[in-house]
Length: 78
Image 1 (tube, helix red, strand yellow):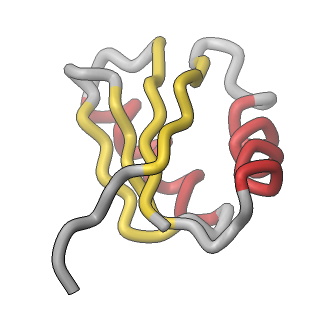
Image 2 (cartoon, helix red, strand yellow):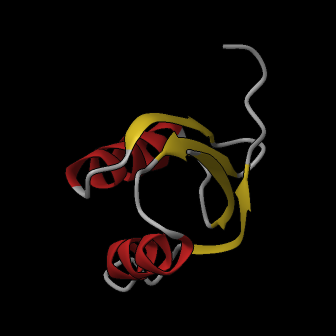
């Protein structure tokens, strides 16, 4: 399943690189982050509760960053 989250606190490519690395190390895949829009999208096999736990674990150590608005994305095609 593909998801997106809104992230506050990003301001440069270094932020994007750090968050991409942390998302991937936490088992999320196909991570795409747009730091200027403050949006991350990624794939996960976790259910919503498990994914919330993963995201909380990532962001607990990053007090300058916050996430909200976890959304499932509709993927068109086969």
